[in-house]
Amino acid sequence: MEKEQTNPAMAPLFRFLRNQDPGMLCLLTGVFFLPLFLPVAILCLAAAGGLWLGRLIWTGEVCLRRSPLDLWIAAFAALAAVSVSQSAHAAAGWYNYGCLVGLYLLAYFLVTQTVHTRQDAVCLVAALLVSAAVVCLWGLWQYQAGIDVTAERWVDGEQFPGLKTRVFSTLGNPNVLAAFLIMVVGLTAGWILDVRERWPRLALFGLLGVSVLCVLLTYSRGAWLTLGVMALVTAAAWKHWTWRMVALAAVAVAVVGVAAQDAFMARLLSIRGMFNPADSSVALRWALWESTLAMIEEHPWLGLGWGSYRFVYPEYDFFVQNPDVIIYHGHNTLLSLAAEIGIPGMICFAMAWATAVLRTLVAMHRTDRPKKGPYLGLALALLGMAAFSLTDHVLFNIQVTAVFWVLLALASVVPVGRTASERQLASFHKKFVGLAGVFRSRENIIQVR
Image 1: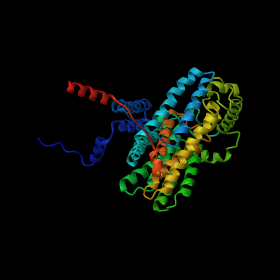
Image 2: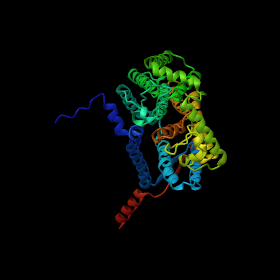
Image 3: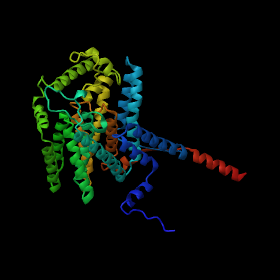
Image 4: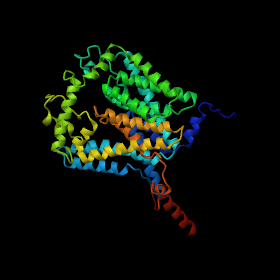
């Protein structure tokens, strides 16, 4: 019989899949499905965690990789748990904490313990970017279909009467989609600067173009401002100006030109009136920030309790005054965290975030080309989320936050030129008798008898 021939174009993919650890494959699949279908993503991440635990029990070898973010993350999780224990809504808070913080810590743990090489990190980012391409195509289809979102109250009809369509793709909300795509734009823009192969470069340019276009079509003004901040950071951080930078700028200009229509320009020009009380979106944010600051002032140390904002907000409401409207957060990530878990817990999370950004920038500075780009991309993604979080609680959505924690974990394992003594502290290693050893001992006893 003739041997079955493998498609030469698919051979590298099959070879990669054969060589991968099952836990890593589950992690890649989970990351791919995070922005697409959350239940499948959770199932895959849980399977990856189960495989890791099963291997530990079988081999009896505990090898934990440490990172500079671990203490900040542990303190944040502990303080969030303490905030629930003293909350007036502890039952709902514990459920929310277990589901959300549990998922985020699982994603963080799996990445720090599974991603060991540059190839592993590239595969993880590639899985996320392929998923992002699907998200963007679905969003563009929504825009082409002209789905009317007026009933969702995402648009002030009086101020923007011509704006009827805002894309939200698989993420259910335009601002949430914009937050996810801000990370995608950052990763892609950084990576593209050092890619030399023709087809990968073209694919990244295409993804960057549709990602920026979808961000524009979300009509999220905070996301638009964030794109500008990311462009300035790129210009300041990247010292190697080549034709790729010019091409990158050309793509951005072309996308803006395509999107330049009456509704787009009206929305863009409205940014100048960010202090205009006639803009209902701006007025709501200022009111929420004032109410959130009042919450923090009265509960500075442990906050209201994780997940309790929506229950307590009516006590501080002076603007909405409608019991049928549920306010889940304060439209600012750090303010919302400080209100729920207290200022110390918020500081711990902010320090982990800042440490991750600094590590990626230091790694970029100490790395020779052509490996600087991916580090810059990771820094842009995290900085973009920081800028966007000033006007929106971008980490309220489970899918977006899980992706953010994956990138946070990636930044925590970035090599930054460690010394030999630091390398010795990079992991915790212990050995005990696992199931494999137990079975082997029994076989030896039986053979002796």
